[in-house]
Length: 356
Picture 1: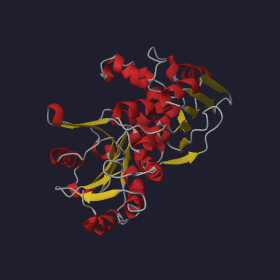
Picture 2: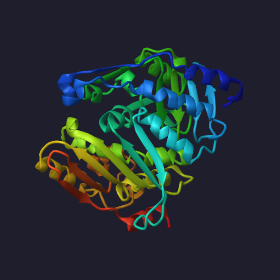
Picture 3: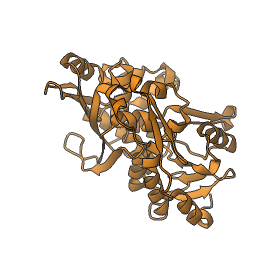
Picture 4: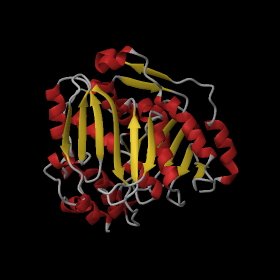
């Protein structure tokens, strides 16, 4: 992709700040969260996107406009986008409602640098923005394009039933998506996304982060809190009772092949992820959440993820969905002042997965 000639125009277009985002909430489905105005995740993410594009050269990113005039950011396909690019992309993925930091590794995690994430609105940041919940596809056979879309643009398109449960919709003049893909989306996919967002294609930004890249590794491991929120939702824990949250997971060595890279990034969370959730409600609810949320509560827990994937003939739908969770969780009930712990990190299995 050739980007140099159009970078300035793209930066100017995406750097505009004169448009205010509007979000909609349904108090009947959001409980206490519906009692105040919800922020626009796309409006909050927009300055982060503009800053990312303005720093493209320094971050080793390639920025271009495709045939539809959508903005395409290569963060690891034909570039060597690194840790800082991945950190910033993870914050964009959370709709500007999360902070992501690289922190030193501890003795338990054998010194691996860790990715720490926090959000003061974890339900909206993680489920309403960061979660890879929108399946995009085009074509058949080996040449088909398949990708799961993350990012704040999902809240504009609202192609997932999850947004009805959240009671949230976003309106803004630009939409941003993060794809774990090794090639740009074809024009029909871009055009579909633009239609679903009711925006011109030039208002759409796709940030591409292959799993095997450094930037991709960071933004995937930065999902430790997100997978905890998603599993809490699957377990039926009331989302309106989740007040705050933070998570951390070790950063694995990237791998040149997709299967190993995917296995290591999943194992970083399954065996090394640690999440703290601050909740309201009863102690029994908090206790049950702590007991059932960790990855070890799944029947498929125990093997490196790449091996688990092979064992089901590479069919994700045959894997127990309860596996996708952090290794340990601390649930703090702010109503009672009591805290409940579940699961444990496993450095031995991490070493097996990471190859050290």
